[in-house]
Length: 211
Ligand SMILES: Cc1cc2nc3c(=O)[nH]c(=O)nc-3n(C[C@H](O)[C@H](O)[C@H](O)COP(=O)(O)OP(=O)(O)OC[C@H]3O[C@@H](n4cnc5c(N)ncnc54)[C@H](O)[C@@H]3O)c2cc1C
Image (cartoon, rainbow, N blue to C red; front, side, top):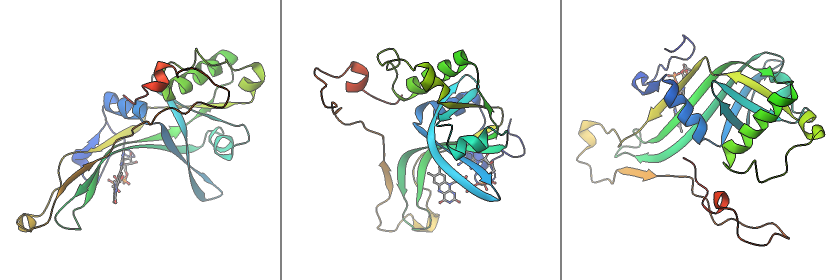
């Protein structure tokens, strides 16, 4: 059920509050945007997220204003967007995009225990490149201490999904204008080895894909 703050008003039929839908979008997206207010000025900053059950982790440098602000238990808004297609209608007015998006509202708290920070760091790495954590060097104490990690509960969240063809006005259907979808997808290219690296990339890099 949506809260009064998360109820989608425009095209309410596109609103989806099922946990399964929200989690699937958060898990597929590589980045989110975190919105917060400092001295009355809103900022919306792109960053990496990872979901762990009903928590969303946001991590980064202790010097980051985004994290310094969000850890003060202030209201934040996290948004995630997956773009699926450009929607070309017969009329300019009815052009659109097919998308799956999530908005999360709430207050984050900072993780301070070494074990929970390490666990969250693992979730972030595995969110971006599943299989990578066990292959790469693990974070040392300095790196763990030097990383701020916030956890935002997914208790107040909404998804919105547009799919399907363009929706033209009846009167426009006979116009000699091409209409339809241009599907878009995130396609990884060939991995590029760093200098000094020999041998083929691991399977999770060679066959990288977002589920
Ligand atoms: C790729 C993309 C392109 C879009 N292009 C446009 C555009 O050009 N013009 C336009 O007006 N709108 C566009 N939208 C839709 C836009 O995100 C809002 O849904 C829309 O502005 C209407 O918001 P509202 O008044 O219903 O909700 P608001 O009153 O703004 O929000 C109420 C609550 O609804 C929920 N909500 C609203 N929108 C979303 C969403 N997208 N995903 C998840 N939860 C949501 C949130 O919980 C929010 O707190 C686009 C969305 C995407 C993802």
